[in-house]
Image (cartoon, rainbow, N blue to C red; front, side):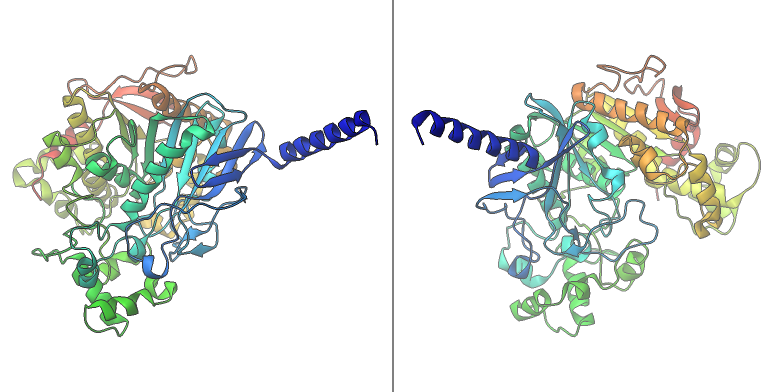
Length: 537
């Protein structure tokens, strides 16, 4: 073969290799190696990227360690396993993948060919810190990525894998991080984003964290902890509480009145599994338990029972990650000061054990009984279920959202409050058939806004109508705008979308994603939320 023929042959071979590589998908090199993603409909995605060492064996119940480097090109076209859990039939965003303790993976969606410093949105899933995952079609980031952002999601340790104490664990490292391993995972994932997102075309200096339910509560934790300082620049909280700890109570070490420590819960759990003592040998036996024995049926429906039995608590104050309740941190000014958006749904979580209306309204005191009755039963229908549920959800979700936006506003930070009250006809029909309908009030249920935020309404709500899809498109646009500019109104909205004003306590305006679409209105629940804010229980 002459030189010219050899050159042509070599060039042809190179062209074939380049074409084959392009056909395989996009490649990105992060700090630990190169990942191969895939493309679809103008979006490139990379799934199942390790952000930490597998927390298995001796790493069970240890602080998160960064992932190790790999050789070659890692396939990142499929989701990794979800974290260990016992599925709950009432999980709004359930696990869809096989489960494993080796579950600390991150997923990335970006506009195809992204090279600029795009805003980054990092999703923290809900599920009561015992259920849920980053998997599932409701969390698909493609629609958000098409709006010009990088979307990141990740898994974190749940249940006893994520929140556990034991005397021998404290003895291993008395001054180190302990107890709240799920929050340690979240901080490590945010550090991964800061270190690696530029390789995907994202801006590590423009990161928005957002989450719903336990994910929203986790956003509160990230806002309140000094260990997440500088890892994000805006925050969105959906039904995440904010007054006191949303889930769990007490401390990792040291029992308090009516609040056993995580160590006490851990010792009780060991005893339930035939493991005596609290020394290194007992810890070794606990680490040797099969994963399903650690789960032990724990989920959102059973965690109250297991807490009552003294074998599970959830997160607790550890003095380093969780130092105090979020509202206490905000009031003191000792928190990560960033713009915030926060809100709840119109029929959010509000469990009550009241047997009469008087019992439901008792927390407001005898002096406020008439005011409370007027605020919670303005139409004088006298429906105990609705009154009791509203009182409960105001305390747990709605009033804490208003408190948070008030405290941020006082600090001079951009702060926006929303309420989600849109209900798809198909969702309303499904609710009527649910066995929970006899206990819960009608309206936009807890977590029902998530597909609207991700603009996945048409994909995940069977029978969704064009009006429902339209609400999702405008809601996701507000979220993306906030991630881009700290202002949900800019850079662009549909002409029919109302301006969403930053919170002002005098006007008390919220953006209500109502049945007919969003509208900016003075909060119609102001009187009852004022009463809730004055509660002392």
